[in-house]
Image (cartoon, rainbow over all chains, first blue to last red; front, side, top):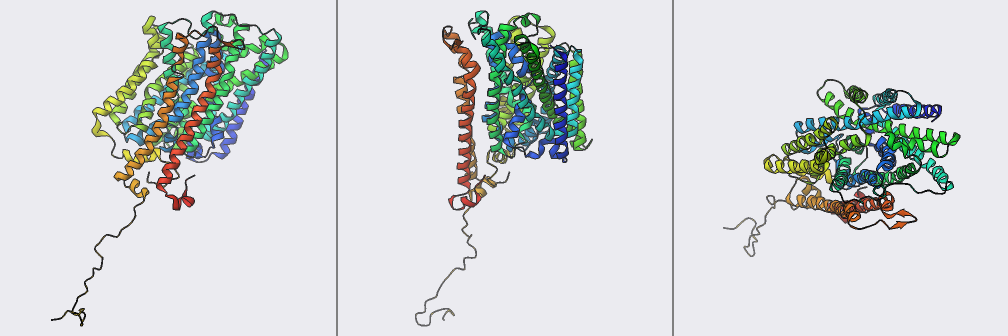
Length: 495
Length: 136
């Protein structure tokens, strides 16, 4: 690929991100602006921002790469990431907004009146965030190297610095504009080249992909391990989305509960439209770029296709456009994650009176980026898709039970919540460490690589079981909390 | 001996109560019932929560019976030969058809959830005052 176009594309995205962030800066003055954009973001803008934030490197590059490498089975990932929003919509969206809290630890505090649950939840937010942030930074380095030949750390550091500057200077309000812009950039970047690539493909006589039958058929071979993998990915992605801190924090920016539902519904449409595209890249990649699998660079298929299929200036330009989209993906997801980590840690700092609210947020943003940045630079590269799935599994095993039971079951107690968060968190948190450090084989390896199918039921069981055993600790004001979570804002009640 | 209020012609005495000790009859609003967490207030809130939970669980069940069953369906039934415009059916279902389906489910849910909330609001603000105080 021609490095000049790639560098220009990355520079433009970086400038646009900082520029829109600066525009937001002029509007962002109060603490509320910093944390939740003063809760005045309309569903249309907010859903674009959620889409922009959610579509990470794993969606923009990873899905096509997985389709190229593993075929139909890979389609379950985008399905899971979209279905996660449907379950978020029906199980938590409106009550979460009505809880009036900024973050999941806030929700835990509102619902359970317990400082201990708050601390455990805060630690988990940071853990999930770092697990998700590290592969984003590493993916940025990889893209930079693919496109420009620069050393891997350049892209990694660049993304980290832009994100830090943005969060520190403008907080959530500017991030909302940046995220909304980046959804449309990502969609455009994938959509426009598709028409030209498909045209090139039909001009070529519409060849079919040459692939083994298990690539074409989702479950040609009735293999229990494959079945376990599919269902575990389903559990992790379906239930993990609602517990991802950077997703949840966006819901507090809705004006009210109904708007939160509207927003989520639009997000479903935006994600569905987006996920139609990576599959096309993956299938075309199987025809024109199958050598990438052997090189272990399947994730680069989206970036490489235009120059391979079209060549010339047009191919280079489309390659640059896709590079811009990929960079937008790294920037937006990293910004959202950093913002959510900073929100939680910054609040913890300012609550203890260490620093003021805004300073706390800024200090936390710098800290929240530095740790995964150091990890990304020092650790060996872990495949983006698997690292992201670990983050989903951890969120699904801890925050999903906390939110679902907290919203729908009056019997949840603080000891129950802590038991579930710690138990589910340990299982889903140790599994990736075992997988990365030991690489276990056979069934144990499969269970450790995709823990969600057993760690999520465990998290739920611990929360319900311990809550039932400590029934006398059900918060006294649980009825009032239920009124607050479930009644529409227009009805004037004591909340 | 005659009572001072007695009718001099009949000798009957009029006995009345000043009603100062009886509690005044005031209609309690649903709002008060809920705010004071009375039995009736609890019933109203619980019925709202239950109808919202029912809508949510309907979606969850639908997902389990459709998406959740797909791997087994693909595994048990042989779809190898089924294709639309040369594209295997499994790819059409997993790559395209799933997404409008998910949106449709979400849309139906939002409609139902909004309706439950409107019904609840109508319960709290009965018809006569609903025109001026109807929630957004």
